[in-house]
Image (cartoon, rainbow, N blue to C red):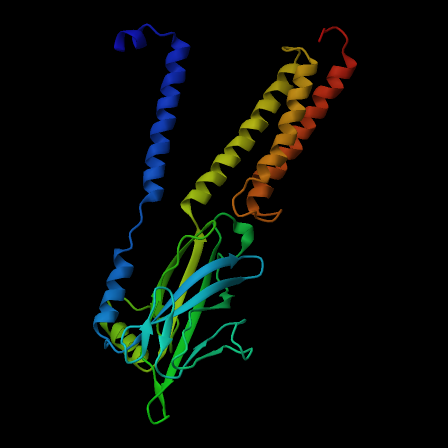
Length: 328
């Protein structure tokens, strides 16, 4: 094997070395973007759960869709009783044994009464419900920054129940996250205080943990969900941009060679330049998440590349129609 490589033509060695480097870089990149570390999130969840009583309701929130153009996100809320004194758990749904109410601060809800107060009657099997939450304005919450745009959503929740005497009582709840990867976004959740959305609950700050547990025990929670483009989305976008620039470079090189009479203006050259021009339009449609026309990468790469390839194609066409000293 080594002797065959040593006897290989210089050009073959260059190509083989290039492929090897590309495979190594790709492999390292894939390993890097596939690595996730949820230990910190799980640790704070375990800490909060350990300081609360078993007689509580865990409330799972799942971001199911992010719409950057509307500045909204759809979330699914799934209450889950931990104690039989509050309700019975099924495989997917549950059944309360007390009348309960859960309020989610959202711009759109799906309650039967048309508001954001969800009432659960005792002894009636139920499941979760969907809400639409509004985006919190931030520096990166702009689709024009694709694929480096990011969006923040807050989901405040409060809960109560009726005791045996019919009196309204605070229902202890613990917010949990069970969001999966959605479309082109990665979703991360952090606990914040109901009274101060800027105060993140962390293990390093014990006072925030104590304050959060106190709020949870009175049926008040608030969680922040951050949606940012996944590393796979960024990688694919980069590959598409490289393909665009490669096509532009190819057409510009061919146009220069033809214009300087170092290569003949053949019909095949004209066809190839036109094909590369139209291929850029197809490449633009491959951007994951279908960003709207006019994002920053369009203005920096796509629009100039499309314009220049068009100019190059027209240049070759003009030279091809005017010169008669070449045979196709």
